[in-house]
Image (cartoon, rainbow, N blue to C red; front, side, top):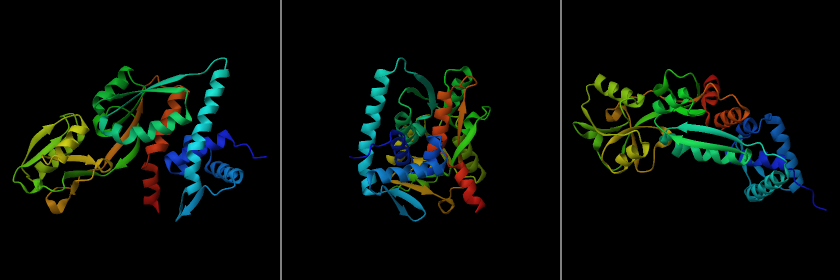
Amino acid sequence: MPQALDIDQLRTFLAIAELGSFTKAAEAVNKTQSAVSMQMKRLEDRVERTIFVKDGRQSRLSEDGHRLIEYAQRMIRLNDETMASFAASTTVGRVRLGLPDDYADRLLPQVLAAFARLNPAIEIAVQCQASSSTGEMIERGDLDIAIVTSGDCARMPGEVIRREPLHWVAPAHHCLHCEEIVRLALGPTSCSWRTQAISLLDRINRRYCIAYSSSSAAALIGAVQAGLAIAVLPESAVRSGMRILGESDGFPTLPPCDITLIRAAAAVDPVHDALCAHIQAAIGNVSMQMSAAAE
């Protein structure tokens, strides 16, 4: 008779598949890394297949591991639906999350997809605003949690969870950086990236004009892709068809971009703790960078 699969093991397995790391998954499911490893060993014993294979110092899903994802999703969904239908009452939580649209495009899919599977009874309402506006909404209590650019919300206490290089980005097949007056696509005057970029260009006496100004990252990226201007973007926002400019092109090195997690004073419920922990596990890289630097 076939052995029954353990739902908790399957939840942990999906967390690893979503986050790409045993360490991040352990934080997301609130277990130690050794407990996660033991769960996966037991899961492999139950299905009698190898679901993870070594790839250097890392582990990745095997072919059977990829096959297991869909079955695990279906089993967990059916389990949760069954338990909800028989429960006398279902605890439902709601979290209001705010972030700029340049982070929404890159971070929301990986953050919310895994969180929804791990926490199906928690609803997340998302609002996309500039970092400065998002910080003000946190102060007013209109949002519970926010992901913002540190420099745009300097007065708001928070935790820096991710650090990325910030780049001058130009269209790959245009020589905009060679023009006497550089055309720029930057955020509004409240944007710290804009302030830093202008200050650095002024320092080296590089002539420029603000050709496009918008709080929408999509608009700035579109200006670059159309060959109309040079923008300032974090490394993870650089797309195909773009070129990163450096000092050899006449553009000074920009400071890194710090992404900060902030929360409202009243956001102290377990649902808020759960989402904050998941965001840190899903997109945080500061602690890893510090460890790498120490080595």
